[in-house]
Image (cartoon, rainbow, N blue to C red):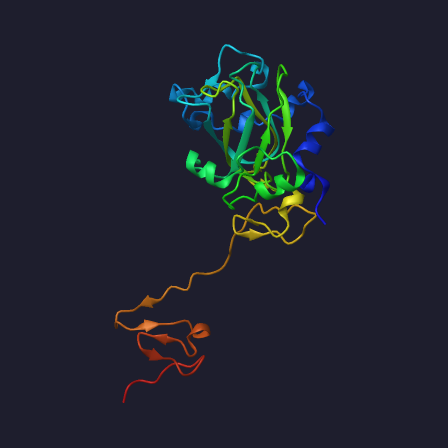
Length: 284
């Protein structure tokens, strides 16, 4: 049976957790895991300003730097991460006024992004506002449908937090955000875009071996070794072999001597040894 976090509608989660983001959760910010230099967008003016709204938490209230759409009120921002992450919520500061977008859609693990035609064909005409419509409009990763689609709260100041489905955002490498539907209809602006969640990176200690969290280690291949115990951590510090090299020695008669212990039924230069410990007789 699915958990409440996976099946609860976005509207229910939003009302349950409150409207405003809390600064006490700053430690869960995924800003350090964002590949900021690789953030890019569509219909953004100027194009290089796609990452301007992607800021650290302490700059969330800054309204001097923002991302703005170009020819109409829709724009797309694609954010890649430096490691897989589990996203719990989206943080937005669209500001107030006619330029504030009123809708956001999110597509997970689309490294090449999405275009506006695909967005139009894969999502509802308006943001879902009821549980049945939301389930019909959204889909799992790889379905072609968005993994999140909701209307933004209007008239609020500061940063608002929007929880997302734990199932659809459990293993994220990139997210493409589509913002649209400003009152002005020709321009949209976004002052802050942030994410909260957990980084799913493997940590290497000073002994140069890897620790894998027990919850994720069961039956998971790590450098070719499959973890077989779900509750423990397996470590391998050294793997080596000891033995003797069995070199073939050639004497002056241009024939080979093979150690008797290994010569039985072993082909050597086309001659099969027939007796395990005996010397072959001379040719007649």
